[in-house]
Amino acid sequence: MQDDTLNGFTGFARKNQAQFQYSRDQEEIQAAAEIAFEDSSLAAIPVMDRRWAWMEVNLEAVAHNVVEAKRFLRPGVKLMAVVKADAYGHGAIECAQKALASGAEQLGVATVDEALALRDAGISAPILILAEPPVTAAPLLLAKHITPSVYTAEFALAYAEEADKHNMKAPFHLALNTGMNRIGVRAEDVIAFEQQINFHRALVQEGTFTHFATADSTDTIDFNSQVRRFINAISALRTAGIDPGIVHAANSAALFRYADVQFDMVRLGIAMYGCHPCEQTRGMVDLWPAMEIRARITDVKTVPMSEGVSYGLHYRSPGSVKICTVPLGYADGLNRSLSGKWDFILQGQLVRQVGTICMDQCMFEVDMRSFGSRVRLDPHVGDVVTIVGRDGDAATSLTDMARVIGTIDYEVACNFSRRLPRVYR
Ligand SMILES: *Cc1c(COP(=O)(O)O)cnc(C)c1O
Image (cartoon, rainbow, N blue to C red; front, side, top):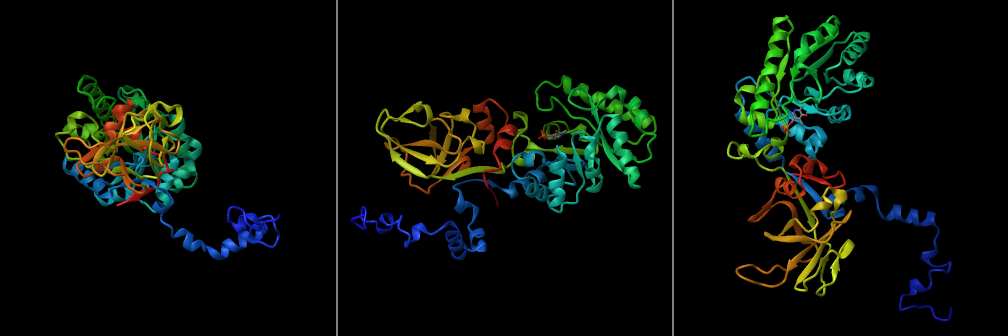
């Protein structure tokens, strides 16, 4: 090589020559990195300095919603905080702890692993799995004091045998099917079912419950028929001398709409996270949304008129806008079918998401013209954008987002993936 420099960069020009740093072998490079960067200082780089997109969970909102729900409860009625599906995406451990500190007595989950995660976090409150798990998981249930729902004799007896082997009891809640036809013993078969299992000395019926299919709908005929079947089944148990234990049926919608189906406990899910289970409850209770999604702008540019943006180039720039990028995409739970149909909030103003939402990133436009009383925005790399939530006078909700996609807020909430860091406040 006749010249030691290439474009003025000496290191670049010399990188193939043995005496310079760029040719050090891999081991030396690793050793240098270990000296330069200690694990403890690397771990101290906060999550929001590693990724410019995150979920904010306001635990004070969770506490407020639990307290609001409790105002509807008759004296002595227990509250179960339903924290399945990672607390509808909000983080099961944090939400469970907050709910218990705010007056919830029990926790509801969907799977054995969800229950184990709560136990591993040191939570000792009663946990009910709202379905019958595989019987092969019985040792885990017994060891960690996790209560299963039961509706098959096979499960009940195998679970009871496992408990009896260790001189333990096998507590369970009996699931009754009163009309939803998802799981449970048919209400009219409850006595026949009990006769199949109740000879076993280890079984302890700690509760009996059902689940409503239409607690959130304006029509009440089917709801009332489920209530009637449930009450009849509970009376049949009592008449037969069987203690049903804690009787429960109500979800969020039923809690707010029907005062007479509280029985001994209600199961609070969606409302705890600040979403209304249906339109009717809006005027009844003041719920605070707990989840907000935010990101920081990673790129700002003017795109000449008629040039396209993102995969497919389905959006064309009108020329008078700046296109901003945020590092958040459908892999984070920002549903791709929102493409071009959703507004973010920048500095208190709605700005339209444009172009196809990608796996890890998406774009929005900022109109650079000033008109009316509108303040002209001046977006910069690093500015915070609200994807869902409140910023100044503007706010968007999970419910709005669900409506655009054609689903329910439950699904939108729990689809925000674990890749998005959760920030609690
Ligand atoms: C999810 C669930 C709930 C909670 O319902 P919300 O509508 O979110 O209040 C209650 N009970 C059962 C059996 C459930 O599966």
